Amino acid sequence: MKILFVNASPHSETSHGYGLAVEMIRSACRTAHSALVKRDLVSTPLPPITQDYAKAITSREPDVSLFDVSEQLIREIEMTDALIINTPMHNFTVPAALKLWIDYVLRVHRTFAVTPEGKVGLMRDRPTFVIVGSGGFHSGERAWQGDFLTPYLRYALASIGLKDAHFVLLQGLTHGEEAVADALQRAREEIARHPLFASDNTIVS
Image (cartoon, rainbow, N blue to C red):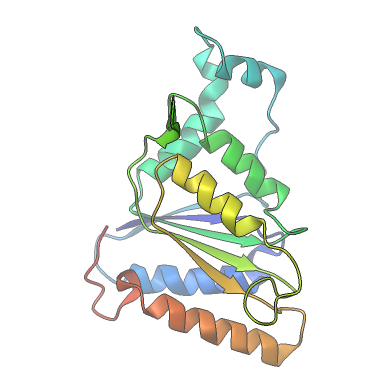
């Protein structure tokens, strides 16, 4: 079992989503021969997309050295059996750090092909869990704001072949300790229903 953990929360280890991700990783890695690959987009920011990189993407004979960062991020996904992303909802959608990661990972002819029907993913599917932390409510009966993060990220991941995506919502995190405890309890119950985190841990990939 190899897990890739991508953190996009500026609070990093102090964020509730980060702590939940650590719990998930410990649960999934109880079997032997487990390994973790961590990509913290906050403590180690990715370089911005340059003009040269943008040109290389559409070039027939690109300078492949310009794809070094993209290739490293893609290989981190390829070598793992499951992906866990911890992200806040910033202004209704993904934070800039995660958007930049997506821009590097979604690469034509490498992670997706263009067809008359649209983009077709070229990567092997694997369980993908997205922990979404938000101060307010954007889902359920208490929702009062829009959610452009979930549909966008689900579509982006599916476009490279990652269709087995599960969104774990931590809502109302600015509404006091009781709201936080309730959100974490609901999340843990939801996570426990997935075979990857079952007590017998029989699912490997």
